Every structure is written in structure tokens, then in C-alpha cells.
Length: 156
View 1 (cartoon, rainbow, N blue to C red):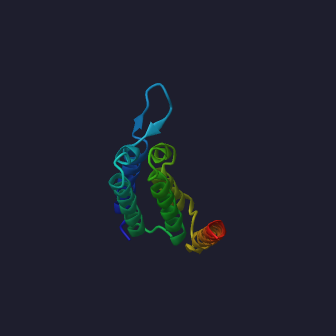
View 2: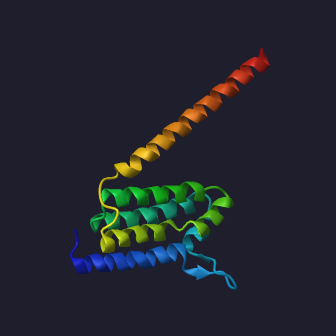
View 3: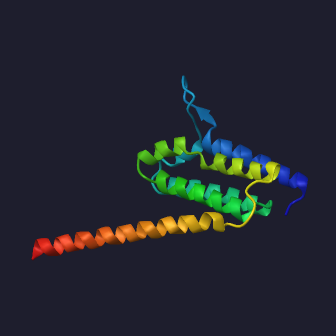
């Protein structure tokens, strides 16, 4: 873990990076802010990967500065949602403008340091996410089974 001044400097740099990625610019005549993330997301595949890597770098720095497992799990969930939904062509670019995962992550980190919130292990996040994924996979398997049965019935 870095010294307190090194920690403050790292967090301040990450705050600036989060603002650049999520809300550096404003659409004139509106309150809508966006950053570099939706702009690089315009390049299919590579832009979304680049945004994910930048967010991942931010999380690595936060790990080195003492983020709890719970905070890290929530942050990883935020960037995963941002990457998955942001990768949908056209709709994902609008999603990137609305969902500011880097700034959400920095808010979590500030709450962690200043208020002592979000302590504890990652299981509080991981178990519900795994449960939802299990239900989704089961639902997809059921839909796949129904489609195969319909095709089999249609062919015979």
C-alpha cells in the first residue's frame, strides 16, 4: 500500500482520468456530458477493449491503494456492464454516455476511504451475480430445448 500522500496523488489522478473518460465534454445547450469512452467506443471491438483496459488499469491502481474486496467486486461489475452493453452497436454508444462506470467506481472508492463504507469481502456481490448468471444460463438452455423440440416436431 502506498503512503498517504502517494495514495492521495494516485486517487486524484484517477479522478481526472475518470472525468476524461466519462464526462469531460458537454453537448452545447444541454446538461448531457460525455467523455472519451463513447468516442473510442465508435470503433467496433477495439474501442470497447481500449475502454475496458483503461478501466482495468484504474482498478489495478485502486487495488494498490487498499480497496476492499467488496469495492473491487462492485467496480468490476460496473466495468463489465459498461463493456458488455457498451459493445452493442449504436445503442452501446448511447449507453456509454448515460452509464459512467469510471465515475461510479471513483465514487465507490471515495466512499470507501472517506466514510469507511463498502468494507468486507467480495462474496456479497459475487454470489448474487453468479445466481443471476445461473438463472440466465438455465433460461437460455430451456429456450434452446424448446426451439430444438419445435424444429424436431416441424421436421417430422
